[in-house]
Length: 119
Image 1 (tube, rainbow, N blue to C red):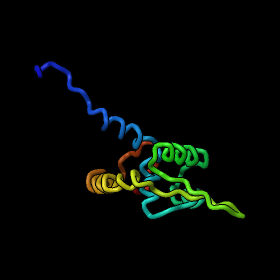
Image 2 (cartoon, rainbow, N blue to C red):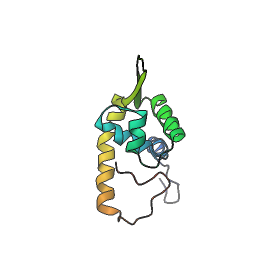
Image 3 (cartoon, rainbow, N blue to C red):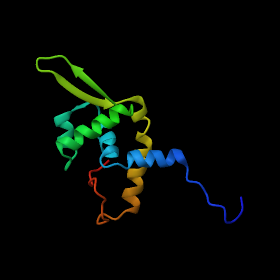
């Protein structure tokens, strides 16, 4: 490589941050690490997320294979969400990011849209 040749960004890392960097995705995955949760329980656990945004993000995470949606027949019908194996595989990375943030980002650091909910 010559000294003026541009370097390419890692495509897999770009995809990962593009997806996980979306508002709420990482926070929802980390929240589900505690175990399966229903919609209302997730809404209470993730302060500041709207119903429509929660629904959109859960659909997106399910479509990506990171979260599984389980429907229990009723009455009443109960729907819960849990981490799929591929979602659980992200937990060490999310824990490392949490540790890094605790050690390197001051508490008064501006937070991008997406909230400051703990991971």
